[in-house]
Length: 319
Image 1 (tube, rainbow, N blue to C red):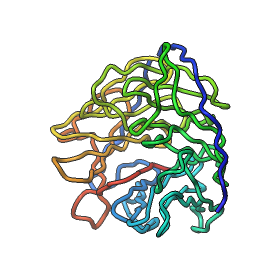
Image 2 (image 1 turned 90 degrees about the vertical axis):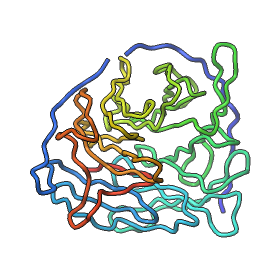
Image 3 (image 1 turned 30 degrees about the vertical axis):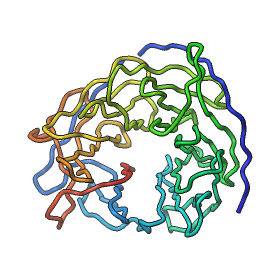
């Protein structure tokens, strides 16, 4: 097991910025399950990650995992690798990470991660756009951690100094990569913040005056965010403008991710109290789409399946 080096807490000063939003057209379903859309959907459900070819609407197995010890997985920005984590039997203070080739399933890198507090296991990580680092979201005991692919702690952000007050990063705060290896993260159910390398300064992207919001994802260009606000999905331009609602329904839209070209969103929609969501695709053109009735909404249902695709973990849209 490789050891990790902890870098102490960094106090960071917040600066304000301003913002606006963008559009395009959708492609209707041809009635045979094909949408005319390009790329593949990768989606997680109970020990299985499936790959759906949107051109043919045929699904296949992408990979499987042990639901007992599994932590999480993340698709790399260039789709060459996935970063997979798990808790090994009998281990309570380490998480094993593996960098896996998507071409042949071989392990390119493997290392143990220990949190700065020395507590916890089963952490998930996100692979950096340049495939050299892993980003660990805040836990109950630790803030944001960035490691190399040997498990060494390169950066550790425990809290942010805002207006004379230290606010700790903790469980429930989110963090994700931007294309230039900057990080975007939430703080205190109130702020969306951004920090570029070497992560010693931050800027305020937006203050969020909502009681329920989160589940952030970013488009491939790093120009737009998708998120859940209250019960539905909103899209926000990172360079200006307020969040714009893009879905509605009688249920709840939990999260969304962008198509590779940013022109569509695949949305996780929950029905009632079930513990999983179904996937559907809508145009990302600034309009509001009714997930229950709108003809422009394409339900994700692979050929041969009697029900829509179910998801209870991460999902990605890749070229």
